[in-house]
Length: 450
Figure 1 (tube, rainbow, N blue to C red):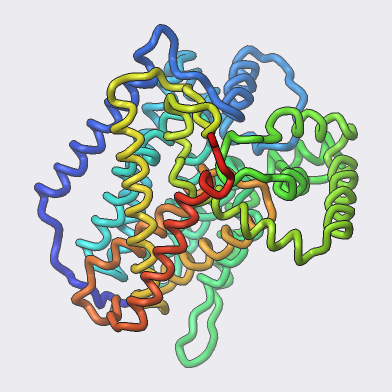
Figure 2 (cartoon, one colour; figure 1 turned 135 degrees about the vertical axis):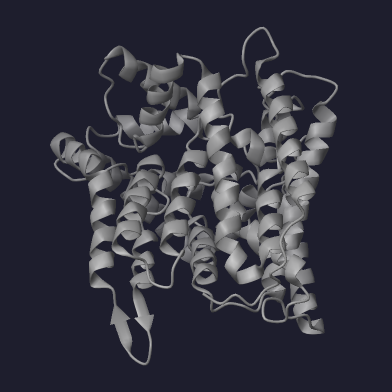
């Protein structure tokens, strides 16, 4: 992997300052979470993950819906078993995993952009208030991301992965699939990592086979259970349901006119097996597209989905006290710090988007394998969310590479990494304006709270 960027290290004082700021922000958000007479209210799917984890500990049988992969339920139950049934135990473990994510991101980005840019990428990701708060919630965002970045770190540590790291990377990809189904169509692209070209194409067949074996070993128990229960080896399958809900999304931000629990209850009640439910809802989707026309459906999705994904009303802001008509849930208690936390979250979010826009426009080192992998993952998720139901928290899995490209501006003096020109700056400015429009104009277009 090319090492063309600035090789200077990072001032240790900056590192310790970033760590101290991150710990202070964690302390503040944990205090807000637990300060009231009762902890913060669980939101959405957090209820189900927690309920299933408690049932698993108690030995109670809960029917599997095959909507959510089982990984987060197992993870919460395991933490409860070790630390006792208190959400703080899960939070502390996830905080540690989030810190690991930042370290892995910096390690991945250092060879292509240099130590200062790698540190900036980790800090931009880690000091985001919404990123910090994500480790305090029971959704599988942090656990999934830790597995993904760990797998990438193993695969991209050397020019060609060896058998041992390849097998371990496969295990981590399999675990990532058990936490979220997000990578289902993308992870096979990682097999290209085992192909090299030194005059002629070479394939590291042994390492590639070990990688696939690692993936299959991790997901085999879940696949077997799915086969026993449904006659089909599945982990979870919510794509058709989410496509149906996505086609009916109207609001450009979360928790306003949401289909929510009633739509899921109707889906689960529509038929006894996942295959039958998917067949029914796939027909609904086809009828919707035929009735309205593909062009109209795509235009409407373009005008809705990415506003939801990039909204500056992040999941943290949504859970802070505020107007219900704006989708503010009030799950956290109201304090004098609430307005400042909202402002900080929105400002950091906007800054990340602007830096990412200019970073992508000015980026030059597109041949580095980890850059290709990161860009393909971003493109894959953007394509996926054009049709599927989108929540703002889904941006979390894209943030590491958005931060990495944005932090690449630190390496602006290195022409092998960043190329500055009038045309590239113009493209960056246009992309930044587009992302800011998606972040802030949704409520105005919807007429929220008018």
